[in-house]
Image (cartoon, rainbow, N blue to C red; front, top):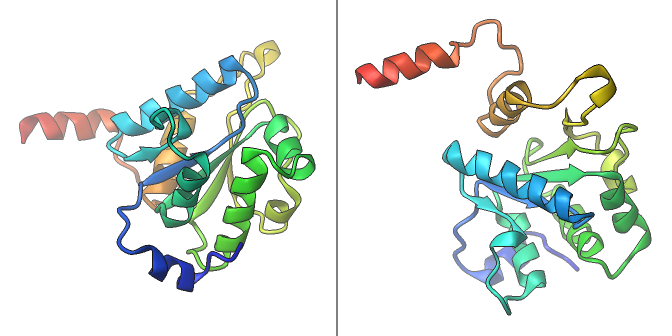
Length: 183
């Protein structure tokens, strides 16, 4: 499947999502986790494309094509995602990865990032591993009482907004909130 600039011109005008989330339906709990992440991003003001929002009967393949037009793609890479991308050619994850792989070179360098969940070895599909995209560690470690939270969401927000990862000169959210109230 070729999804370079010629294919995009044939499609006509498209209103791209701010963030397209690519993930595997690993378990009910994982799907709920991804929907919660989507909700957090939506509350931050982003239009998020996620398959959970599809109407019954809508074409999943057509929906997956929206990834190439999204401003950002966030791959939620749990171990099942990597296995399905690599070993199950007809799966939704494998098809979506094909679209992403074929589009990657036509998109800006910061277009795609990875969120690692239940993936302590930080595995990626082989094609993506070669590109070494920005990644976010959302792996939970209950033994160390290390649970992803607001700091990781802030890092994700900084990636979407193309802000520097260095927060040393950043204005604290409390100050931003106080200033917004005064306006």
